[in-house]
Image: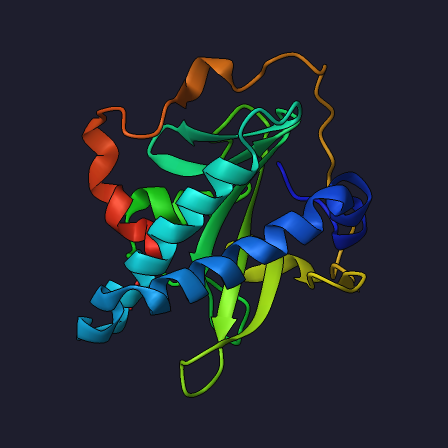
Length: 205
């Protein structure tokens, strides 16, 4: 089981919070400045446009970083930190949950009883829009176990993170510090039969 707590996430990842928080804001602004944004007829088109920009900013800002890199684990794209934390970037809602097509991959990502990546903690950075859908209201670092939010950290670019305590004490599996993800890492863009799940990355409509 790869469940952690909000406090543990802050302890291990706080040095990355400012950069993680900035990526969705800058991606959303970049998408809105794109002429294609004015022609988007559905929210799903906007979500994918913002997701593409988040990928671009994440790759740029963590290029050459000694502890973090943008990778593909099986059919999932995200940021791998310290070979222990895998973080996807998604659009979220006010319930602090990402919207996903109900594929097996999507359901397994949020079932921490399923060991997808060799004990690596699976998390998400979510951006939540205001009611009008014209600006980002909040950016969150979350971990979900089935229908339950177990890590809930609000990320701010210029302020300390605000945390909500997990409702139970999670198991924190220890890793030996070796490259535990190396055998399942695929570079972005590499072919894979599961790439149909790529459509799920932007967060849905």
